[in-house]
Length: 294
Image 1 (cartoon, one colour):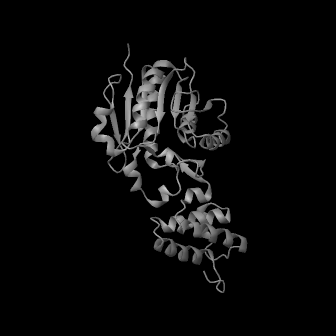
Image 2: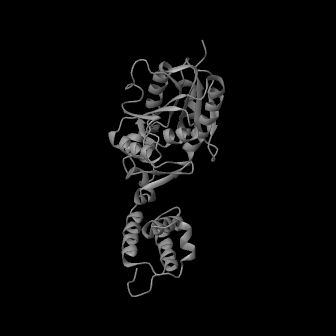
Image 3: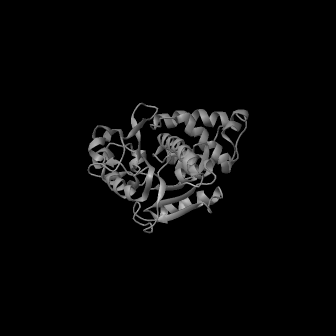
């Protein structure tokens, strides 16, 4: 950017959009708007009424630095420190995965099943969110089900720090317990749940090498890669959840479309017939299982 020209909001957005497009961004205009709104500390829509305004030097400096880092591949969500999920803003940083629209399908499915269970058992459902990351699933479920009690678990203490702040932001600390541990192994022996929800690591080692640089270089590998096969964590989750669910309870998890053809071989006999939900791209994405009664 030349410092001899007057850089209005409109010119900054035009120049940055072109620059980020050349740098490989899939959504250069959106990226430019989010970053400039963050630097300016205003809602993104306000940029459209301020095209002819010249931002302050401090705003331009902050914006330039974020644009530089975005061009190097840093995800926008990490640059601004938050990401919207299910119409709610969540703090994120490189200790947690960036929330993705596909996971909203899990929440929708879980809320539908929770309604069924609530009609049968009352509103005080006990729900575990395994691999909670930033806490998006636990917080969203707690906001939508105002009497449910949740346990959010993650093996990463750094991720739990982020989840703790998101839980506190929405004043849900009395209904969401946060635990550090590997899947459900950290729970006391008597703990039982009506629902177990999870967006576990499900990427194989080979798939990981094919992911975009913005994912591999910045998002936590531990939260993505399950192992050489991709199903390792899901197989352990299936075994543990079978012991922790009450009869008639649900296990709902996100998984890789690459595992869809092998789903029958992964599932064990403790479960009813799986229900598979596809994402907006038509890929198998969410599996719903029920523990048989009796």
